[in-house]
Amino acid sequence: MSRRDFDDETLMAFADGELDAETTAAIEEAMSSDDALIARVAAFMESRVQASAALKPLIDEPVPEALTQSVQKMIDVVRKREDATAETSQQPAADNVVTFQPKTAARKAGSSWTLPLAASLAAVIVGAGGYLAGKAGAPVSGGMVAAISDPVVAKALATTPSGADINAGGTTIKFVSSFRDEAGALCREFELHRVSETSLVSVACRVGQNWDLRLAVAAPTAGQDYVPAGASETVDAYLTTIHAGAPLSEAEEKKALGLP
Amino acid sequence: MKGDDVSVSDRLIAFLPNLRRFAISLCRSRDLADDLVQAACERALASQDRFESGTRFDAWMFRILRNLWIDHIRRTKTAGPREDIDDRQDIVGSSGERDVEARMTLKSVAVAIDELVDEQREVLLLVCVEDLSYKEAAEVLGIPIGTVMSRLARARKNLAEAAGINPAADRSPEKGGKT
Image (cartoon, rainbow over all chains, first blue to last red; front, side, top):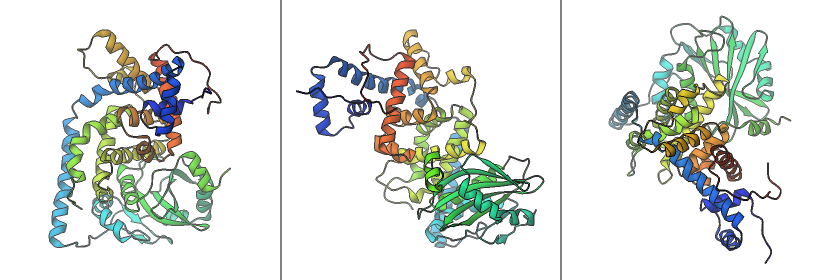
């Protein structure tokens, strides 16, 4: 009988009961004559038990009242809205966030949440050409709208990894994350900052060689690097509506962008 | 929206302790964790149509929360606020009834978990603490199962080493390690 070597992953999977029957049998067989193997398997069983035990106290800890209440409140609001929607049979909500390629199913899910969030913002602009759906309050300045359709931005979208900043003509472009939308298109969330201008939080998706601007939310700035929570919540809500996938890892992003 | 199954909103409150534990372990700050839990609940409620009944609700929630956390990290461009060591030890909890030795062991395991790199810690939490399968963890994290396994094995070896929970084993060198 030849002695087989098993790597850590395999022994761990055995300890976790995640192994196929054939390999399981092989390990059991080998363990009958190999104490070191038994010890290695035991170590994986032990680490699981210990990890679980170590974090057990956290789950017994009472959830802060404020958190429970706040979540309950959100649930109540959603239920109320669902009931209201049921009564008025899907009355379309006035939607401040006009997505550039609206998806009917997505709108149903997202509109009720994006509306109150967006209402707290100074302005929401959208669209490939910088279509402007301004709200009362500070209008989005022309400078930033122009900046976002600048070829420099498109180039940066194709070449700059998330987490990096680039500077172009006084505008700081901050790349937040990359992800895939429902259709699998590569999309990127990024922010544009310029001193003493309204900042923009944007989402653009790649279509062929071009970057399609899907969303731009104007955020009144309190500083160079600061985007108020309202703006990012709106973007989050938008990402939900387009069924955005998980943020790509560094490696996945590199691959998607075709970077070395 | 409301199927015959239990809806997302019905499950959310009961799931808060789990979600909060995952959040605390993930971001290592209670305040941040509570914000994160709240944001995850908000996101979950907004997209509850997307929850497929028959799939694991906990995995779905963990994925939402973790995505928000990743987003937060990238936005702030740091590894996330870290609390000092006293706060961190507090994460172990204040259940003071156990005998001293057991408590010290647990504490050291908790600290060892805390000190794992993020990518190892999160997979350890999902599989060993929350009992997700490798496949479910892979879906939550958006990585292949093979990556889950290699990270998890490394996490557990590191943990065992740091906390001294290895049974006295003959550590014979293995063939061709992957890392």
